[in-house]
Image (tube, rainbow, N blue to C red; front, side, top):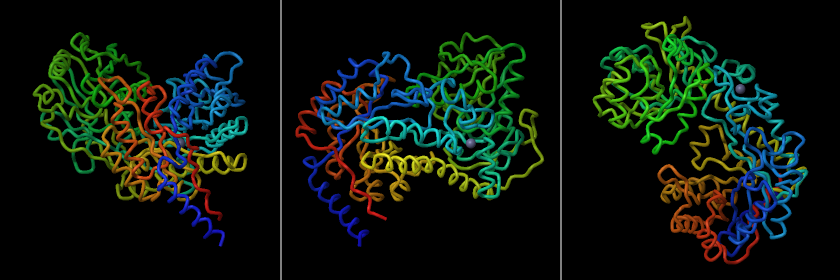
Length: 574
Ligand SMILES: [Zn+2]
């Protein structure tokens, strides 16, 4: 009976709020970084701005930046540059609550947020995901001590402050697999096998789980040193003049199992014996279209392999000395002038490592000569086995065999194992938070596409289904409103009344490589769409882009009347 009553209540609240639209309770949230409020004066000015926009909830990032906390914590040091004796979170809670604005403490759980270990990971280097040749700067949720630490930290914050909620972010894994002893052994114990055959081997064949590749096809002068399971080129070496070009024909800077990093280590070892330096470069066109995350990932990988690559602009290629090594990670668009410079560089004795080929510029004859391939092939995303053709000692061949079908079954269990680690942290925080402050909401910023979320081992539909999160905020930042529309349709299949899915929208856009406040008409269009679809509010990213125009739009249009912040329905009692 109680159960039935619960569901009926849930349904009626959901319906009435949807029908009420903007006149009912509504979450009018905004994300902001505590690094913006290092003094009480800075905080007060921003609170006044939030209040003027008539927002009613702030999601304040209080833990990130290599383990710095912007609240009084026994577990982590106070953030750099915070005025002595001042407590940013405590001050915000007081100032916001006086104006009826909720405060949710926002934590970045997965990404570490610093280029070098500073706090937490300096004392516990083994708490990071181990990519194969060392550590990475993402927390490894596979380890119980990592989950315990983060859970303790969030609960400490909830106990000490009068919070309206705890908010997870980056509550997922980064792009790398984890080859650490704990994950391998725990997986073996749970499922009776190693997750990936050869996960710890430095010889081929090797599995690349979840490989994504923008393939180059039809090798002409390039020698294929390793193949994918369908016989297409995985690793190829092309000699040109006095130099050579090694192509790893997939997004190798993101997914590089130990056998492959061994190949890169050996190759760079040979290439730099004469004292040549390693340079990292991307093109302006690639940067404009794809950003610099591949460049950053490649820098991490090369550093781990013992090199200190200097990042240079493409204009400098023409001046590089012969004997230098140039690394191009995912440089899909290469301008004709740059292609010619690279060709000249290789011909006079330069070495080039390409991670994923220049698929969008293969119409240029210079790039066909540089790579030794005739054309661009397809994009693929799948689990793969890479086998050495035995043509080069740089791609060492082992005695072991790999059966891809078995590997796929294992990969599926491996995905389950990783998702479980992330889910266990969410569950633990939810359970403890409800015991400490039942009314505080436990929420999460999540990938807006369910498919992307699952790929990052972030199973938020399951958290909603199992009741271990009060609501999720999908980060639907696309400027194309049709994308938002499709995503809302997908969310409604999970939560028909959007009772526990609050669309997170962007008020920024990228223009010529700079981030700027989004066009007000577009902000308006997306807000209205959410409203028509019965959303119970929005959270905006982020305060930094809350310009006077946007304040006026919120204050005069969307949020004219004061309403209480939306509270999701109580969970039906179990
Ligand atoms: Zn691990």
